[in-house]
Image 1 (tube, one colour):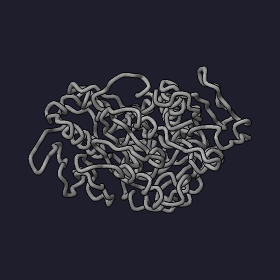
Image 2 (cartoon, rainbow, N blue to C red; image 1 turned 180 degrees about the vertical axis):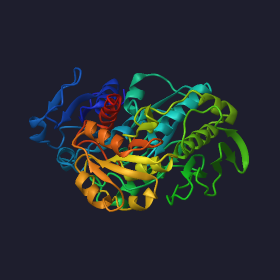
Image 3 (cartoon, rainbow, N blue to C red; image 1 turned 135 degrees about the horizontal axis):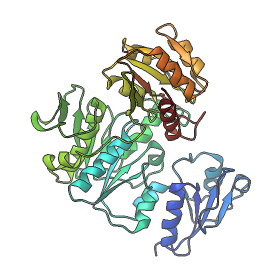
Image 4 (cartoon, rainbow, N blue to C red; image 1 turned 30 degrees about the horizontal axis):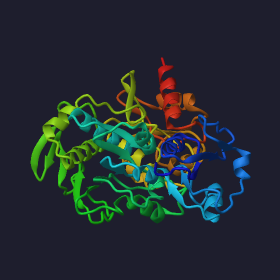
Length: 434
């Protein structure tokens, strides 16, 4: 066993931390889990140091052979720093798992669309006879997958900037860069640092690997072969227009049997088809495999049509770029519900994006007043004390033929446990309308 009798500290008692703990123990390590959260609970039968004792922890040189950090923690925060200051080597959970598997990987990063694209890629592989699973930053952590002992032909691995911060050897046969826009500025000092973290996905690629990059993105894809895609008219190797997909100008399929809608999702489909080609799959088979795929909840999800108004749940839009993508994908006039946690994002570019399509706006959460001050001179704006009031106000401001859309443009942690709970609150409020 690779880590027989080694003492390994795991930072974070969530899903990634637990997966890493299981994997380390499978390889013979003595594992202890640390988590500063007061609500953290003991994990299985692992020794745990939680809450106040973790915050008061003193780490001495030699206490541990190395420490594995969960992606939700910054290596410069006080708890990780206690280990690194004591000279304990630090490794990220994703990097740790990568070094313990030889399964081929398709890695997906980007500010928006990562989860949908990851699911599409897994659906392509599974539908074409190659066993796959969505994992990494979406679904099971990479450590959970490797610890399970199940053998997959290809892993569809969503990988966030947080996970990329701590890689050393990580590389993928296909590395996807979907897009880049402002986000997580509550974690990074600025856009340059956020960009640099995401760009590490190409750090270890070889000429045998493929970089799949949205056309117009300025990222350096290293030594990999670079394939580009676009659904918005840019020159690219793979394109979408008027319900059809093209490669080098030749039609390779249509959307006739697909359930996904919107140009942003057509780019996700293109990226999935390109990933399949890296592994030798045929276009017809891949499009057939995607025929039954539906966009998951909280991602431009049609909740209900009532009085000729569509109610759309896009709670997954946790940054401005995702919000803009949602607006561009709609054909109806819009009453927009936006707002949430203050992530120090600049919403002023959205003024130019409204372009007469947004009829009115309703704001919620921590930045509601800030947004009302920014957009109040352009169109009718109201603020809801909670989601039920916001939906009621949006319905009052709407007209027949409109789309009432929750697309917050920021995270939800000021009011909810996550975008899922926020989206469910929207669904409940819409269901209560009569």
